[in-house]
Length: 199
Image (cartoon, rainbow, N blue to C red):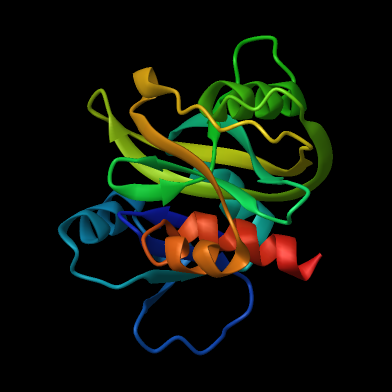
């Protein structure tokens, strides 16, 4: 199964049917991608399920309709078992960013966390999940795939937000405060935490 968010509404590609009565159910082979993008843009559906006979083939075809942007980021945990968050655009988020040309995914994840939070002491942990969302830029719909890693830090420093990236707060939050932050966050960030707690 693949879950792709657009305007915080999911497109779910799956090869097995499951109950989700609020979502539109469509057969992938009969689907026009531009039409479902339009439905999600105008908000006329809560979400769309695309039933696929061959999930991997359908996923490859789906991705071919977009310019794919690769990014990576981290879920950072300190010695007090607190999670690092950033505040940007009115929502709580996790540090992440685009992978630069010639850069490895893991290297980019570490770099982005250091840049966006000012954390100098980072230990890369295991891979957690890849998330997907569609956004509109330069008159083109783009698909961002973000590769997430667990990270650990021993730093006791106050985090420094990367202001030039529109980040106004960088902070560690305990479990209780993290749950509250997720109430004002993104669907993909929920998936990152879900992957962390299920590993």
